[in-house]
Length: 475
Image 1 (tube, rainbow, N blue to C red):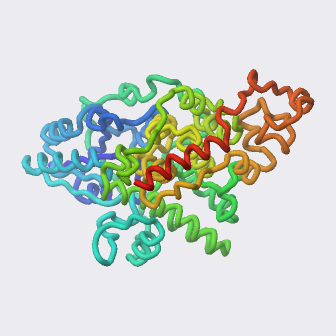
Image 2: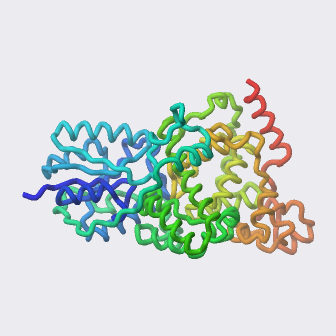
Image 3: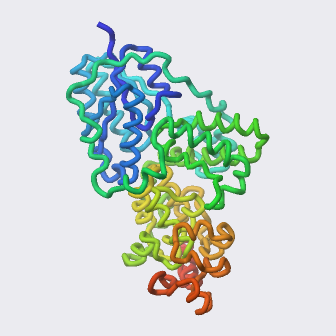
């Protein structure tokens, strides 16, 4: 009988540039599986928006596998040994994951399978540099991005070239005990499908189309343009990278080739550094596994976060009275995505102007973001809050009015997501409370009725935050 190898799809939902899949193909006939392991994930099981994306991506992956993807739901450490024993698998292959709960679980699984006489082969399919490979000269991990990337990563061998998809993929007979995609229940709960279907095309093919469009339309001018939310200079590849429909190696090398064709060395350097920020987040999570839950800087355990829920609710609903903040929060709710510049603005407003705990923002993003990624989400929230590695200086508090005026001067972004302000002149769009009564009337804006008054005073809340941070820093 031909050897049967279990290939476990995880955060690598693609056929191309998949080193563990190539290993499985080389070993025998492949049984491709996916396990929805909410139980082991615990409080970090996928949020609603991510589950919608996963359903679509698995659907596309199943098509590329001729309808022979085997899906399961439950604890992977229980299911995998059962599958291996049932089909007498000769090996199991997977690409590594780096979340703390996955590392612990995978170690248990590898031990159990080895005890069954089934070897396990794991590969790196989702990072450009393994976290344990990039260390300071004196040993230990970097805690600041620039030396991590410029001295650490770029001194390593360059990212390998992407690998081709298997030329031939012999698939084993399906397991009659697996579930249908519908039975995974990924679309249960809030109907994200109703609003996201028109915005996104999940899957390996959709990821390539988005990458190609970005390289043709967005890479030129990326260095400056990426800060303007109404422009097409961000790649929006983060969901595809998170679910592994594209690998960072594919993106890195495709961008390099595109930049060479267009003579865009400066734009390419900045785009590569953004990919490296993703790497840095995983690096921090690997070396500091409590990153999602605990302040990276313990002195922030004394920070006087506020406990009122009304500010958090106003922020979640996009009803703070600050248009660029509200536009960002509504973009998130309507599309499952938020522009990176706006993410920093809304996060700063929550943790500094409203003094709400970064955990609250982290959790809301976790449920609403299509690209909800434990490493990037937790590292970014800690960065903005000032308590993380390479954190923003505590005195850096984004002013939502000046940020809106600078990066959305013509109001295209705000008018799209806050249409009740669409008729306001540009001069008052980012601070409608400053508009004369006649201008508000002509624009159909009634502050406090169809658009809220500012939830907090920017000057007073800024000083309150500075005082709180200064007290923590002085201890």
